[in-house]
Amino acid sequence: MKTELLSDNWYTLNKITFDYQKEDGSWETQVREAYDRGNGAAILLYNKNKGNVVLTRQFRMPTYINGNEDGMMIEVCAGLLDGDHPEECIKKEVEEETGYLVDNVKKIFQIYMSPGSVTEILYLFVAKYEDKMKVSEGGGAEEESENIEVLELSFERALKMIKSGEIKDAKTIILLQYAALEGLLN
Ligand SMILES: Nc1nc2c(ncn2[C@@H]2O[C@H](COP(=O)(O)OP(=O)(O)O[C@H]3O[C@H](CO)[C@@H](O)[C@H](O)[C@@H]3O)[C@@H](O)[C@H]2O)c(=O)[nH]1
Ligand SMILES: [Mg+2]
Image (tube, rainbow, N blue to C red; front, side, top):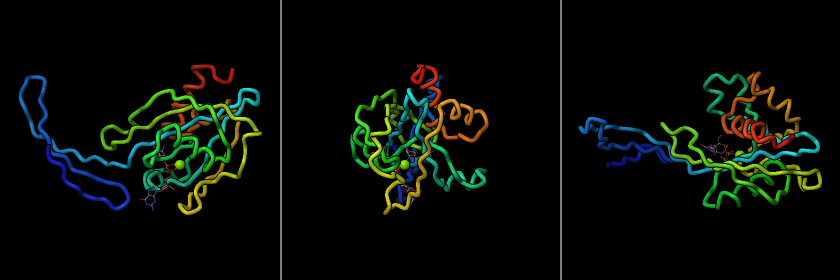
């Protein structure tokens, strides 16, 4: 296996040349590019009594250059691990992006979001939130100019927004559907 670095500007893009053994036992040489931006964590914050969930809204350039008219995406709170343990990372990220200080986060599963091109493992969590856990405005890291808007909306409305296409982010859809399947807000 040979790995060649194609780009390491913000994250890393590698070109990997390797031998792959086919079903019939014969070998062929394949070349694949893999974008490594580290691993990440994402979380659905929900409040059963209020029937609400907390989501975020932010500009995502890669979507803007591929059909998302204003580039805005409604997503669950999420961030890159930057070397942290997934659970530590997501708690920090929740405070930074949404302003809530959550304690008990529950890991539900870990997934590859785009296995043909991106190396990233995404750790998925859910957690209960209450109004009294709100300690700051949120909005994301100032120095990273994240400009994140915090949205608190009904779970019912969020599920409708998947059908209408207003929510089109995979991790967000997976977490909302998980909550529906498990009856987290029932
Ligand atoms: N300057 C610069 N900044 C970048 C670049 N790429 C990303 N950033 C910035 O780096 C910050 C990363 O913020 P996090 O909150 O840690 O990560 P995230 O982008 O929200 O990541 C989450 O969403 C991704 C997309 O769905 C997921 O891939 C990831 O796992 C996580 O869930 C963001 O402010 C983002 O704009 C780049 O090429 N250049
Ligand atoms: Mg983020």
